[in-house]
Image (cartoon, rainbow, N blue to C red):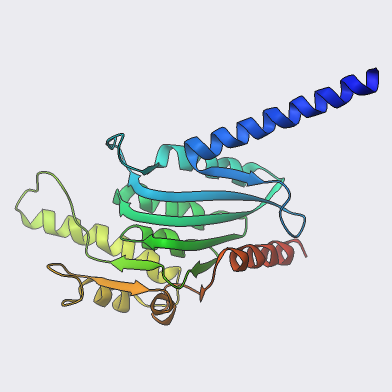
Length: 237
């Protein structure tokens, strides 16, 4: 009887943990993988839709909220049981300051990290893709680099232009310092004409992103898991 009660308690605990995990996936797009390959615990972070900043997006928009992501990344860094971070990206970009803050936090973590671009990682999604220790993009994945844009009222003064340049330089410097390309090359791709209709910028598909030095390798989910386990094993030994 005592053994039966213990089994029932274990079952209830597992169901509770599964329910909590399902809720985290639904609300935040995050989950800790308990039984991953290589016998190490990995944290999965998905960045999808538009990156939301200080202004709340409509409820009909898919979004990633930076106030959810930053505390979770801090918790991952502080958790000794979690040994690696896998970032899945399918984003159109969004708030520049919030996206860059997430990218800086990922880049500053001591845990090994790998990113995988699925579908697309556009605009401020580019720094997020290169912020990890190693990066992948699926063959049909896309990345778009373009100049910084700002919505709302813009003051027509030289100081405004200087401010735009300052923001853009921060993004360009981050991309160049976390990839195999240079600041000059990133700026050239951002300001390219004739590629995007009625706009400046460059669109890169799959292998193009690797050839330009932004992404390390073309690959998929199994490649990303294998690489992350390799990085974890290397760090441990």
